[in-house]
Amino acid sequence: MFVQELIAIGSENAIIEILQFLNENPTPEGMAEAKLMVLEKFVNNPMDPKWDTTQSRNLSK
Image (cartoon, rainbow, N blue to C red; front, side):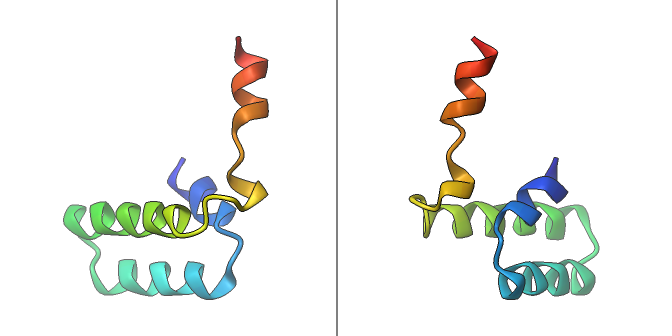
């Protein structure tokens, strides 16, 4: 799941930044921090259509 969220960011620079962070911090705490970084990228760009999950939510109803 984390990989899909990481790819969904869509920004090559952001993905590289997070992967470099994980490489430098290969611990459970580092993974938790990387997940927060992914969420932060989403929060900073919520109108990006890549993050629109409305369709998938409607399909699951």
